[in-house]
Image (tube, rainbow over all chains, first blue to last red; front, side, top):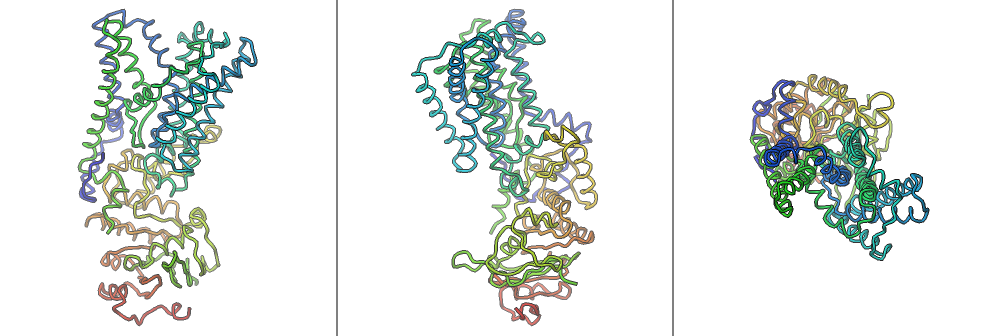
Length: 360
Length: 259
């Protein structure tokens, strides 16, 4: 992953190739993977527009696309935080299922179609999502079990428990307040679910880039030991990050209930991988320390736009999988080689590596 | 006047290994003290014990003449001591300003601050002032630290430490991974830190560097301090002799003899 050059190889003067601030802002922008991948998205949109014209470039098409990614966008916010800490959360799809089952049960038990009942369901969904997230975070941070294993386990457990609770049969009684919210409500001209997702995405971006919580998230992914040494409570922060991911899965459960009017027990088995792919396509490093919510959103649009476009121009939708997989690998490869090129000439990117090399 | 920080008769065992064996140490305000010794002589253990990173089995610490017990790194920070570790503990993906204030971010005023928003502008201004004061080679405050040279990273770590330490900075092998020019920069930085009145404790294997920058040299061997000598007039051979035990040192510190 990293370019290893002998430490101290580059003289100090050579490395600081820094343009004045005004210039460097643009340069930094251009260096962001999310900006490049936005270009790719625009190219895809351009290609489909040329091929299908107004049919593709219509409001209804993009409204449909945005509805299709609303749930994933909410999940993607939590996942971006988790991956920036160099963790992973495979359990989100199952936690979503579990939360939606709990919410549906709670709402069915209280009976009725009002917002009051829906509100109870929303609270129940988010609470059970947070509970799963805290459990994940605790096992990762305190028990030091690798996140991949912990969340693989909770993926299985949460889905299993959801099936136990329901006998494997989807619950179809969702209050009309929720389903109507999806079908009829438009806020500022945007359909309700994408609007909620947009709000979550914007808040997520602000928290990640502007607050201490976000800064510590980067710091832990970048150098966990360093973060501990400067006094950051790394364990607590990790638990909070996984809890955030769980909360997003809980909120995603509510949106999914509103969207489909039923729980989706069998329908979320690939949700985790799709969201992870979007996060990574958007330039968030699986090794931690860098990434952005904006990139994740762009990374979500690429598969959704491909799918919609293929349908419209009459290509079998199965090709979407092929295209997305290719974009994923290509995006990471390009990102990696650009980063390697940026670091060439500078000394080792990782001070931990430098430490190992200098030890006798 | 009592030393700024003094350790008397520290002992600490790990199983059968006596990492510190009745070891003493002292540093005065505004001086550079080099702590040298072969691998395993107890230098790092000593620094850990002095900065609240390691409890000792026995021994006493005195800070500005008062007896103290330092139980956590946090407490050491509050007393004005900072450690620059060999691995620097910088986050390579963050820029120098973000690294400098990591864990100590300045919140915005009012409600936003309570929500966790940070005052990036003030932090940038203060960081730039800190770097200006120490001179040195860090010129970009927006680039990732990971893309910088070893010397620049060392500089950032040192500036971070002295920004928060107003009494003592411990430097663990600050020149180990550096080239000639970069080493000189770091040594110049150390002198400037001392000129600000902050004491510097320098752990190093580089005898020429030690002799160039230190006021006093304390030599450890087998977990205890075997010699204290002024850097001036001391030769590399004498230092090595004391480190290896080849020379029986006549200038062994008097306190050691009493203890």
